[in-house]
Length: 294
Image (cartoon, rainbow, N blue to C red; front, side, top):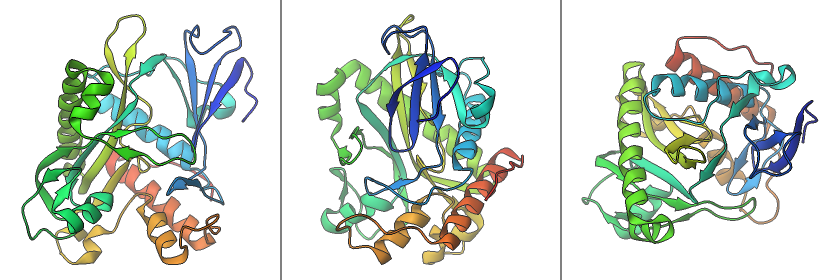
């Protein structure tokens, strides 16, 4: 983890690192936290190499932008500048007691949902109409929660009832309704910019002082969401799933790795293409450009 003046490292995840002020003794007594997005990329529960140069800065900038678009929903971002040496890829945030679930909303049939539908005509146990194709829009967005996994472990889809058993029925209903609302709003914003938000993963926690359920972690980024080009999608065919997210990397791995042993290094052209797509999505959504070195 990076040495950052005034901050002490407490956790390193697949792609993000967490710090507390040096004045705090533990995560529990920290009044603020520093989240740093690295350039690491993960897929199929593995951290891959090489890194994607500039990725952390783009995902952080996109999260900040989405927070401003959805600013009526409480989020953990503090109005405080991070240390200058990592300012482009870091956020100073409020500490939250995070719920141990990922709030996934699917508006289109893709990824693991498509695989399950092929086998069972369901997605996360939810019955769907017959005859749907990969990439089709679902009759209505589905809330499909999952448990959070540690590095090297698999996220596991769970039912709403299992989620309610974990965190309580009232909080489960609140997270479900809030997740579906945020997905709908974000989808409309993206669609206005010619982009389809196919699905996304949101995370929430309870504010330690106010008790308010609060949006945390990264939000609606290319790592936590599936984005497609609206114009290409409307033309039909499998090219309609041309993505702005790390599905590019998943696709390459599925073609070049049997998921036995460590994954192979990513080729240079894939790294460059992925970074270009991340940058293009940021520009399409925000109307701004971002400079990152390749």
